[in-house]
Image 1 (cartoon, rainbow, N blue to C red):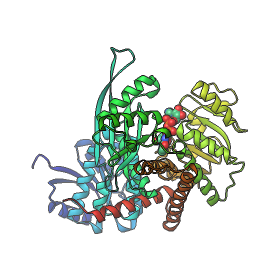
Image 2 (tube, protein in one colour; image 1 turned 45 degrees about the vertical axis):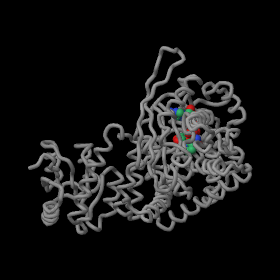
Image 3 (cartoon, rainbow, N blue to C red; image 1 turned 90 degrees about the vertical axis):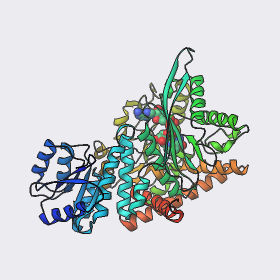
Image 4 (cartoon, rainbow, N blue to C red; image 1 turned 135 degrees about the vertical axis):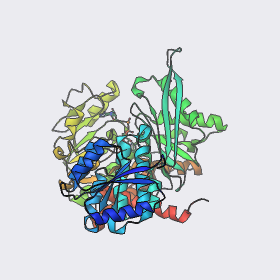
Length: 548
Ligand code: NAD
C-alpha cells in the first residue's frame, strides 16, 4: 500500500451498504483501506487498537442509536473526522449530528464515488486545518454555524468548501519598544480577508490577549455574512494583535499600532481592505493607522480606515453606530414580539463602545437598565441604574469596579439576572450549553460577535427567546463605516440626521427580510440571517465564475 493510504473505519451494520461503500471506494482516486465494524462496541475496540484517518458512521446500530453513537465515537477519539452515513428518512438526525461536531453526512442511496471521496478528503483537510493556529473554539463555531445554514439551504458543495476557510491570511510578528527604552516586546499580529468577491474587504482590528488566527478568521467570516446580509459592497475581513492593551501606555499603543500598520500596509487600502475599530481599539488607533498609511503613500488617504475622528474624515454617528443600530433592532424586535419597551428591563454585558452606547440608547427608550458590566465587575440595581451617574463614575475611575449605588455581580451571574432584554456586548462564548437554561430574558440582542454557542441556540429556541443574532444585531457599525468610506471617497459630508435615517432604513430592511425568511422556512433567526448573507455571496460567486 502507498504511504498516503487513507485508513477508513466504517461502523455500519447493513452488509448491503458496506458492499456499496466498498465498491465506491475501490473506484475512487483516493487510496483507501477500509476497516469494517458491525456494532458500536466493535468500532470502539478498533479505534482503541489502531489509528484511523476518518470514520464513516451509521448512527443507528444494534447496540447504540442516534446522537449517543456519535458522542461515544467522539469521546473515544475527539480529533478523528466523522462522516455520518444516513438513510433518506434520517437526514434531519444527520444534520443535527453535523451541528454536534461531525464533519459531514452522506445519504447512502445518493452516494457515488466522487461524492464519497470528496467528502473524505475535505473532512480530513478540515480537521488538519483546524490544528495549531486554526484551533479555536470561535472558528469552529463560525464554521458549524455556516455548515448548518449550508445544509438547510442546500448550498452548492463547491461553494461550501470555498467559503469554509478565508481566502487570505496574513500573520506577522512585530517588535515595539516599551517606555523603558531597552525593553523590546515581540508580538503576533493578524489580518485575514475571508472573501474578495464582493469588493474591498472590511473589518475591525482587535487588540486582546486571546487573539489568534482562528479567532480572527471567525470574525472575518462573520463580517462576510454581515456585509452581504446588509447589502454592502464589501467582503469580510478582520485583524488583531495578541496583546493586552490595558497594559500599554498611550505612547506604547501608538508605536505598536504604527508598526503593525506598516507590517500589513501592502494588503490594506481604500480599494483593498479597510480596517475599523473593534475590541481594544478606538478612534485614536484608527487615526494612527491612517497617518502611518498616508505617510507611506505621500498624501492623505482618509478612506484607508473607518471609525476615525470626525476631523480626519470620520463620519458623524460612527462612534455610537453599533449601539444605536442594536437599539433600532431591539425596537423592531419588541414590536414584532408585542413587547412594550417603556418600563421593560435590560442587562448589558460589556461597557465599552458597543455596551455603553446600547445602554444609553435603551435608557433613552425608557427601558430600565438594571445591570451593566466590564472586565472588572458587574453592577446591579433592580430599580434601575442611573446611567448618567455610571458614565460619570467611569470617566473618573476608568472601570466600573467600586461603583457605590449598586450590588456587585460577576459577569456570569449578570447573564442570569431576570430581565426582558439581555445584550451581550463584550466577548464571544458567553452563553453556552452550561448556562443557557438559566437565562431569564425574552429578547437576546447580540452586540458582541459570537457570544452564543450552537447548543445554547438550541436551548434558547426551546425557551422561546427571540434572538437578534450578531451578524444582524451589531451590523450598525459596519453600515456607518460604509457611509464613512463613501463620504471619504466622494469628499462629501452627510448630516447626522441623514446618517441615522439611512442606518435605520437599512437595518430594518435586513430585520424584515430575516424575520420573513425565518418564518417562511421555519428556521431560527441566526440561520435565517446567515442564509440571507450566504445566498447573496453565492449568487455573486456563480456570476463571476472561477479564474482562469
Ligand atoms: P471595547 O473594547 O470598546 O469594549 C469591550 C468591553 O468589554 C469593555 O467594557 C471591557 O471591559 C469588557 N470586557 C473585556 N473582557 C471582558 C470579560 N472577560 N468579561 C466581561 N467584560 C469584558 O469593545 P467594543 O468595540 O465595544 O466591542 C465589544 C464587542 O462588540 C466585540 O465582540 C466586538 O467584536 C463587537 N463589535 C464591535 C463593533 C464596534 O463598532 N466597536 C462593531 C461590531 C461588533
